[in-house]
Image (cartoon, rainbow, N blue to C red; front, side, top):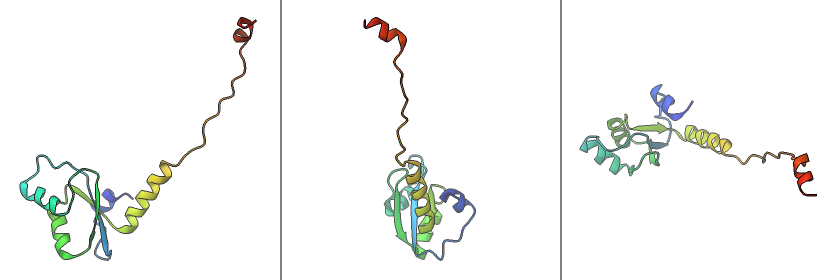
Length: 109
């Protein structure tokens, strides 16, 4: 379950000591109050993640801009990063065996 689906399913985050907050929607066109809240959270660009302590003041700020962000716990964040690393893992190269063609051998003689 990715962070967005978990957040939409209202997974309880009260037990997690740290929250990983990712900005997933753009800032232009949002209200000034929301822009100032995102600036206070140090979220200035899309797809950037910050880590914050799980306290009531931070949760209030997150509740204010909940349509612009995704909140993940540490386990969810680590699982997503591991999934991404596995997807980007180096794969062995594809080796294609080329046999000499008849046309190339006849033109060289």
